[in-house]
Image (cartoon, rainbow, N blue to C red; front, side, top):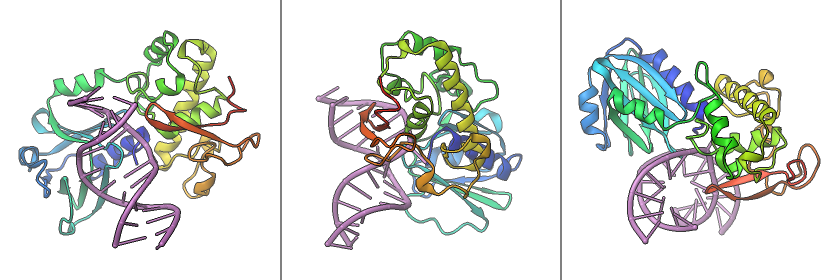
Length: 264
DNA sequence: GCTAAATGTTGAT
DNA sequence: TCAACCTTTAGCT
């Protein structure tokens, strides 16, 4: 289930299992047959993640670009791999491991130039090495668009999805409806910093837990129903003030917020 | 067993 | 603004 932290984990997982080894690549379902044939037998040299985009780098500058969309998944396991069942878009196998891709929005071969074009469309990704928040601030501070909509725009900040949008806005006690340009620099800086913290915690633990200080998040220690402040908690009492959590569609997705803590 | 919704994006209207 | 993409799961029956 893919926000940016999931994609970065996947890049690491592919790297750990396959990096430096020749892999077989196939498309049992057939929709990626041509690309798979071109990659088959090549060495996976490196992996990269940018926002919600995953890149697997093979010999001779061949990049596999994968975007999971809403319900794409990678499943990993040890060889021998099971007989392919259902719509298995792509299977990578080698070095004792296999990885199966299903349901992705994008699974395609790209050139280095195409890869950089994809990256150029994206805003700073808090999970990359030294993300520069300035382009995000520039967009935000000039925009009359609601902050809840801007956060979902991958050209503003890459890797944020519907959960992080709702949770980060709550943690900042910011109304999702405030125009970007009404957000002050200190508020933005605090939000950017907090976003990095919760996303790094998600990267470490593999799940989004925003109700603890990020450095204390641990897999399994927080019940799933306690993991979020507002996301998917419509009608339930706000954990801070007891006001029922509100919901409405914004940017095509269900937005959740506390009308009292996040007034204005 | 069926239906709706889901951590997303694109392209047509 | 909406349908399409294509898969899994939760919540019904």
